[in-house]
Length: 356
Image (cartoon, rainbow, N blue to C red):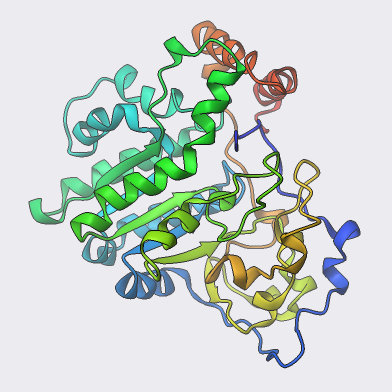
């Protein structure tokens, strides 16, 4: 089960796992540097050879990823290689609403906002405007595309009905099925129809390998692993470890332009231990299976958005903080999860400071 607790920053676990001092190679394996390529070029190349390109967002709310995603949409190559965009940030319960909106229909704001506001997540994770701005950008892109090339956004979060959610077990039951549901809707709506899609999810949903006996960290299975089980070779997965200081592993990354994408197989970055890239104070990745995983075991490539100090977040909107209906709704939903008190504190901090 993975519920997005409010504002868990992606922090390096350097002291515990020794990222800066780790030897990224293993006996008999090469030590070649990862090579940065212009990010859009690399991503479109991957799309030509894989029906699914899974792109992780990095830390939620981050502006560099948002700018990169919008730039991809505005690139004429995007609609030439992709048919669909599968997103974590919207509930499948509102797929028909989103279809009308993306197609250019007259959909009231109060109706379309339910897609991200009423996901399985009790937190404010999708309520920062960058997610709405993305949906509007797809709508705008479709306005200039021919009918046979218009893009579809597929909402991959399970269709929870919050009016029927009464307790913690109800919330956890919906959250337990998130990755399996996202993989199934992708298979049904993309692969079975011989279409191609860009998947945009949080990084943990795209790891190939998750812990099988530590559900407090992540689901034992990810969207990627479910898809690869049914369609081997179909997914090209790109990780975005926005808090990792890559210069500790490969110093010349300090000269990489942002955004860049680098292939990982057999490289210094790819052979480095996986856990330090993604461990946080709330997500201790020491132990099996992570001790023996390298980054290349989890992803095919890495998206570099710049040094960690440059990864700025979009501020939380003050208008929502002043909306009594919204605040009551979020606090009521947070009251149903074990860490709800902490979640409310983080929501109030977001309202006070704009940051998670």
